[in-house]
Length: 333
Image 1 (cartoon, rainbow, N blue to C red):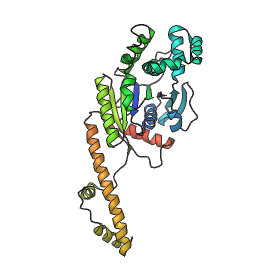
Image 2: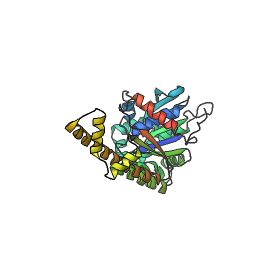
Image 3: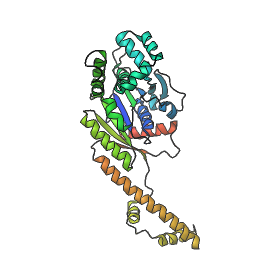
Image 4: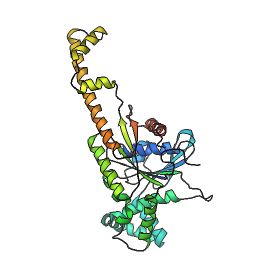
């Protein structure tokens, strides 16, 4: 099926990163559902071994194999893969050296763990290599197996090093299968078919980490995608009321009179209720002002932005579909 008319119509690999606590895995899962909508087939990949995909879809722990986990709106399919670096190492040894059996012996001896600990760049090549293979894979008819692949990637602070595989393995091998494999992976990651999306909240630290991550990504020649602002709360007050509260001109006595007139409260009770509500309004106004400032900072990065609502009932399967629909409405998928 042809790619949909979206902001990322030509992108095959969507890498999703974000500071811890921003809902990175949730956004990656919702993006996979959004991309699969309308009859497409999407693979959602996890690379950190946390079984986060299984948790957000309320499934048992996923094995190291691609399996269907959800049906997207209008009939698309979402598959998932939780990459195990050890199994990826065994596949690698069989692919390039024909040594899968020997690789299992090395695993028992702990050499695989030793190699990926001493040379973490090699571990990254293994997991990104598995993902890149899924992006390139074609069926007997010559068409790609997956219309898109979504990677739930490491946090923002590590994303550039994780994806910059050619540089990371430069000290391991100058020639041979490892070097060739890393070059192949790099060719996919740095191509126009890849976009690295950032997930953030409208708070100072996540926004700053996002901006730093975008700068590092660009400096490394890696493709920055969009910014997903997660857990956005809509203001329940008109802008004029917010401006008044921020400027300290909010009058609780006037609110108390309004409460009395509406028959909500009377006397001292109205005054107490007005003060409590007034404090809430002022706090809400200041938070809204801070969020506006963070939006402006994010806009300075020059990336396409998407705002996802705070889910009142928490993140469940219904919530994932709600986020996916929000993404589609905004043109992200």
